[in-house]
Length: 390
Image (cartoon, rainbow, N blue to C red; front, side):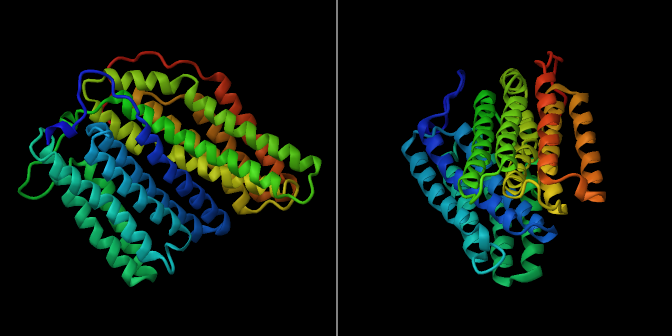
């Protein structure tokens, strides 16, 4: 069924079914931020990170799939509908993924990954990428044993099995889905539409920022008393989201999209800059949203380690991710982002040593000033020639 593949030679556009599909991940992002908010601490952060990596991986593979395959093809529309249903179940299970709904989460995730891979491997078996699709299916099927086995075991075994499963899945694209006695797949064979890949990741960043704004509004609406400090924290939270949008979209997003579209090896850039490189960007936005909620709820309250790690740690993750993304695309590290990260880390250390001197509102103001300064300093990245291998 060769017609299932997108035609090449002209820019692929994001179509309505892809936007509809993304609605499930609005809910997933909300669930992840609420999980972290309800479990501020090392264990909660580790669980949220693991589940965030799983949610991102499920969405990212859907993006690669609709880049290769025509999402308006009837077979793909039905596949996407099934993926939405499984994704909704996966997101619903997030709060109790390490408890009563572990098997629910694992089964939904495995259905997403293995089900989609099987459909594409069968539908596109006689295409130039048929070998790649078969390799992907084998790797996801192997990881599925760890997901289901871990969910059934529970406790520390579950955590160890799920970490191993993610390690298996995340390593697979990096070494070309290598398997004994089977030819590995190189990025040169991953003939993707770079512009489509860039646009899809930009849309996910918008989803994450939208969740941040939603949390900001809901926290203010749910407050019993609107003090001047609460309103100030609300305004600062909004400005932080705006500054993050500015850093990501003002210049670099468009320039990076042009770069990957013109690359001679878009598969390599799609893997390094977008598939892997966007993880800390998205995670940083989610963590920042949690910090915004804490700052709005208790702007002049006690500063805890959790407050510091969310209010300041979120922007640090975001800026570090954007710096890594910049390096993957343009070949260098922007010094303004490195300086900003250093300032935020130093402020965080000071807050941990003297929490009474820096309440949550002060931390939030510091974060918005630093990220805002980066946004104002950013300029269009110059053309640096060929992209360095990622």
